[in-house]
Image: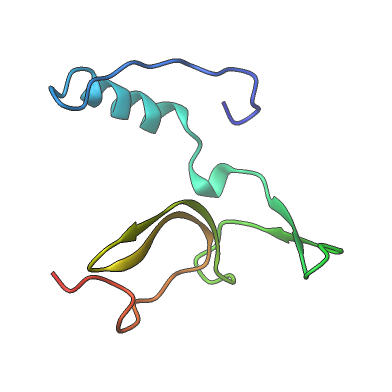
Length: 98
C-alpha cells in the first residue's frame, strides 16, 4: 500500500459493530507507520513557488492534513486532521474541556 500498487476494499457496519474489529486490525497491519513513509513534498507561499520536504519527526515543524471541518453550533468549527510532522500543543480555547 505504501507504493500505491494495491487498494484493498473493506466492508463494515458501525451501528452493529459488524466487521469493525477486523477492519481496524487490517488497517494497522497494512498501513505504513508514519516513520516508514517517504518524505512529504509540498509547496509553500501564496503562489506555491517554494518546494519543501517534510519527514515524520516529533521535533520537526508542525504540518498536518485537514481531513474534515465541521461547524458545531455550541463549539464552533471543529477540524479533524492527520499530523504529518511535529506536534500540536494544547492551547487554551482550542480544545473542548470535557
